[in-house]
Image 1 (tube, rainbow over the protein chains, first blue to last red):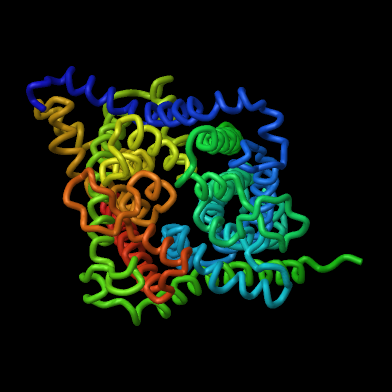
Image 2 (image 1 turned 180 degrees about the horizontal axis):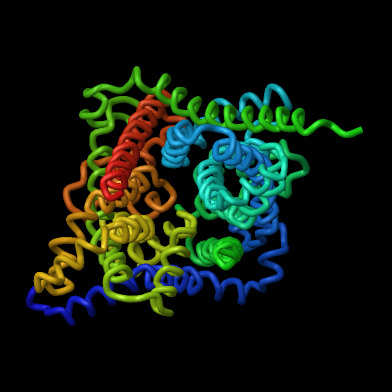
Length: 285
Length: 278
């Protein structure tokens, strides 16, 4: 790169540095370009709030998928958030540093397990269990929620641990010096001080859950209907795209991109909320 | 009636300890379950022979080759972009509106679900740029996906190179770029490699973004414009279409072992790197 000279190198690097934001814009641009015209021509209200999804008949209402995504994601949060936060608090406050130094990387390592593997375990182990114990088809909101809840554990735990660790030790010492027990200190001082980081962790986990595709396709059953109970089979927004993308053409394909637009908007909202929570914490220091 | 703080503490510790134990147990169970069912199928013959009958019998050789090629393309594209971005952010600018935009872009990109990457790759690389379902389309899509990971890890690695290294190099008359090339990058290398390896792990495990961009051909690829099926996609198809539970477990076991080994090496490198620089 000698021929470029120092200034040239700087320019090239500056250009490269904008690759990520360019990629982001390119992705948003093309998804919106393919999906938005359809939403407008079909009618946003009809597209979002009608329950009729019959691509062959030209009916594209994604309300059941929106409801399904919300239920499965909320279910996943019910499983993942308490378990993850409890785990993070226990590991940072009640376990020797050395033990935590082993367990945290182990949990992060497990974040690398592909989503298809989680889905497969759901199909082979969890769904039969639900079918035999609770009834219903097994592949259901409940199965999806549990599998997603487990999948987002590493995200929630890892980010929560970082935020709890960044609480200054003087806070803890102050509380202990006042005669509070270790647990009182934890739940009245340390955790509240780390609150915004923990909230960010939960929101990011939520983003992962709502965006997850393969595991959910495998375990949630994929029936297009508004679930009557947690044991009903459902199809999420992501599953809807992935299941039909392979053969969709024309208006049907546009409708799937439009589903992608809806998903993208939800994710952007969640990410900005998480970003706000993180910045709030940074502002406090 | 007030419960003494000692008791609530014991109860809280118990509950949280159980939650931790449950979390670890679930995660360990998943790995052991896959290995137990899959390892009996796995062997050199499984890895190195061609699949027969849509994967019902035979091995997964073209799938392994496809996975490696796709990952290589992704890494070869994402690494220069990611490391270049990290060098620019750490060595060439101060915090400004531009760096905030760059970081914001990387953060947002990291949060985008893989199915959206798949949709984008399908419409942009496969359809508009007419690359078809191919190694190139899939690799480019994956490159976009792992870019934020590589930027983030490389930035951390470069930041942790002590400033004195740079000062010595400058004082010897080296230019900024010479310093970056000969002093900063070599010292930051283990950290950068960690980021790249995490990217490799993500590429190998990805399904949704790959299935719509690289396709699912089981044939041996002969050029970058051929469609391939990665291990994750193969596993998904075997499992979902009920082609062969046995071979699905075998593929899953290889997938999990590969990814765990890669991530383990990455973390190992990172730890040694951090220890060295402190």
